Image (tube, rainbow, N blue to C red; front, side, top):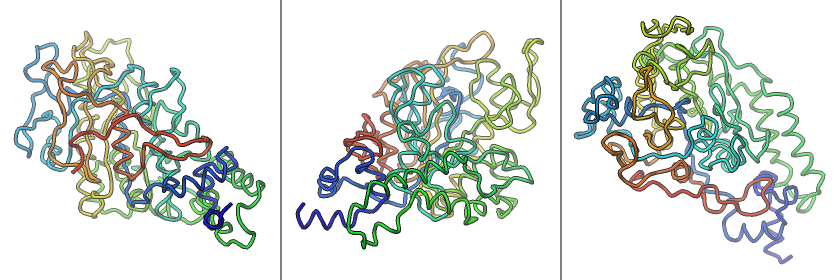
Length: 466
């Protein structure tokens, strides 16, 4: 080993060892040093974050940001398009607040997936990589990758937070394993007794983090015993301990600190307050926050935390409110009332409040906001006045972190059945998310993989970034 290599080894800390898999995961020290010389070990540590609103179940592009007023009656739906503050851009009339903020966002209308299964499509959308085997997830979700490669931004705040879970229908950590899981915040943030207690990490996850570092210690030091760089970077373990004991995340989750007027703008319900909680987590130092953003009610059960946009029936009633049972719902079907707003008005309220809040606090320039589901909905309205799973077309909203405001990228045909311009896949959104966060998606070293790994086969979406 040459003098320069010895110097690099002396400054190799345990965080880098975990990230590139040195020794423990199969990458030899010479390979590590070669990567270090090439500048490939760690991505750019920009202070950028991502707040991902996962519209689980699949939002209808027809009833959101790609209305089709010229389509036949059985396709175009009941609602009209409305003009926005960007001349020539129209969205559904049921999102009047967002219509006045379209100059802050980009809409991609030529989205296209490849699976109509909630599980496989969600895995694809949340990782940028389609499952090789249906139902199985190998590649981690974006949040786990960002957390692993970029780490936390503030002590005591987990780098990856799930509200209430990292992402429905997925196995977020993939090949990384449980030590790289998100810190999930369940419960109802609108409840008076909502709080995050200490020592909430599952015991097996806590012990896994400690075990990883113990294994590295047992392999022997990678430099002289006197090297201080190897004695202060028990990052994974320290992150868990600090998160559990510092009180930082508890303070960030205290929504009572917010003025009532702000809380009301987001919506005084479980879904609006989750969006507000996500903003507070980003502000406190989280790197990546996923909000599973959908109201629970109607035909989908009494679940108190996991709602859905999966409107196979009575879509036009359900998207607006679950407060009353539509007359056409069969008597044998159980309808679960929810007094708050339905998915569309709640998304309209919380998303516009979120974007306004981030901008006013100087955070929008460094926070990528993504709102998307796992697929779109069928052009044809079915016999129960709903739309079914449809991976061949959909739309996505993005803002912040260098995203151009006021642009519409791509288009679908007259009936909203397929992209009429270049289609952009989940892999392309993956490449774009990594680009915004400063992560090299082409060649990256990851734990447990013995060679450089390409994170995405996609391309950064043309025209998305300034």
